[in-house]
Image 1: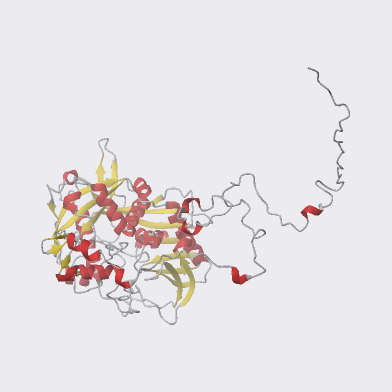
Image 2: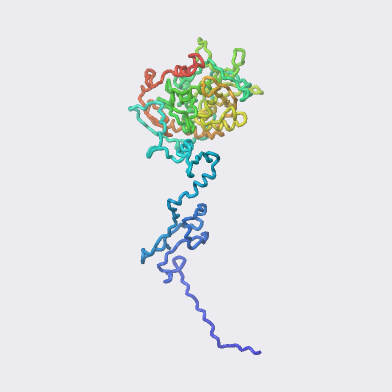
Length: 563
């Protein structure tokens, strides 16, 4: 075979392309004619290439990947289609479900209900009558209507929520200076506040009885009625603070007043504090004949107690009950008697004269000062409730408080007698939820006083309907700083709230001011009030002597209880 080669074939010629040189930048100098009037859509190499067209996008319920094929730079309308020639030829696809005619609706419903019946009544409270018709009994009808909201008339949403009353009536001659809402106060912080320095110590403390640590639900102990005087003296009536104000500090208060301000963001009920500015000094006081020292019950609960004064479970009656339980428990767990050893501070109780022969509660007062910066020195009276001797012989100071159970069913709480021994953490978590403000105040008071331990007692009613007899079901102890961390209480934020109010009052002129928590809003208001407001001769603002009010509900002791 011979192979012939055609040497006369023509090969295509290669023409060199013209390369444009852009002297002013990069890219082409001019746009080619083929790309003129073409919209540009920015894109990223990370964008996924998905479907060209999806007619089932309306029925796509995959919410997790809704933006799966979306552009990184956002969606544009450069490539949107517009039918300009004839709009009448454009129709939307109807994706609605075809509705059955009335005679076919529920055709097999009655058959299923009749088959599922058990005996006379169907399952779930359905009553089956003749001809396959089913009805609900009255109980299930109410439950169904409650779920659907059928039982209410159109436009009626039930009774409005109960509006709480203010702790003090705002008068027309009061000038509002500032409103501080809780979201702003929560963000405040004043870190690096050192431990307070003792200026003076007064009073006598009794030692704690360790046998109360072994109390449990099966070995409960009745709560006794201790006949002792409990002093709750305000700032300006304290003779020691009057003496110290001449040489030390420029802001004066008590631990209860400081704890109320520091834990204000957890409070729901209304409260008020009177502030007097004299020169460069500030005195924080509570008003006379008020419920400031009463312990709230279920203040932060989802369903707080109802305002029914005739009931023993009203907020005021529960507060009185909790206050007396706390006072009696804090004295009962101590070793009393003339033969028992006592811990005495340098000075005696400043609220008792030497010629008085009365039984006073065991309490130790520490007058401490804190440096808050900007030449602000805080002086406050703090309290200890008892003392515990360690094996090494060193004393440990205690803050003793009591939580009380009134009616677990009405309070939507945990049954203490069933859960306290086995699930104490669940009981404490429930109390932290319902009494967040009260527990935070106790913790702040223990931290300010420098207590080594915070003793909590669990006290319950013998009968939920009897609010005069109680039993001790158990005790628990914490270190104040560790417990503050456990309940998410920031002392930096607490100091920040206090410093904010101090700075606000320092900018004002000399006079009398009032801080009040709004009863229905998370707001604290500062008022400028006349100097003669809340004087001792003004009896309209008070509600009578607190001791007399307590006696109407309780017979814990004689009229010697001063609160």
